Amino acid sequence: MANKILTTETYHEEIRGRLGVGEDVLSDANIDALSVLPIAEAKVIAAVPDYAELIDADRNYVYAAAVCMVAAMLAPSMTARIAKFKKDVDFSIENQAVDWRVYGIQLIDDSYALINLISTVTSGTDSPIFGVAGPTRYKERRR
Image 1 (cartoon, rainbow, N blue to C red):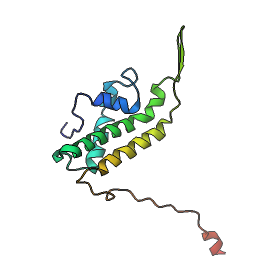
Image 2: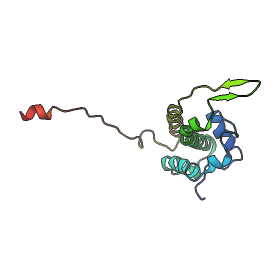
Image 3: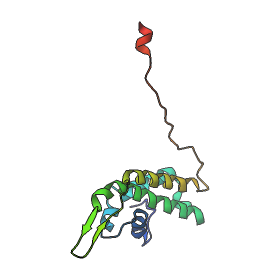
Image 4: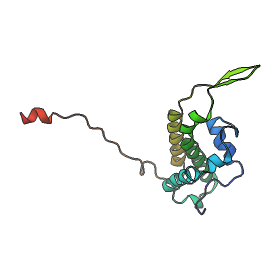
């Protein structure tokens, strides 16, 4: 794959660390899946087209942004991956209740915050603009 940001030997552990899970919950294959890793990296590359020329801190920011983006893509699936209760003869453990959808959104925000720290990125140029429209009184005006 030509466009790769996550090339270190530790990126699997870093992604699992962002999610707070171990390899028993999230395998390397789950992280490297074609529907996850390449898509997340493509999102970061779209925001930082010159990522390959970055040096020093900027390179670290783009790397960390890619880690966050991959974790964000995996976060919604964590509900199904993590058992709420674990019981054995000797112990019983209840996992923390995490709203993985909200945490995934936070990870996306973290990724874009890191991208905005890159010296070659002009902040705000790629930010989507949202508009809100409410109900109108069109029917009342027709009367």
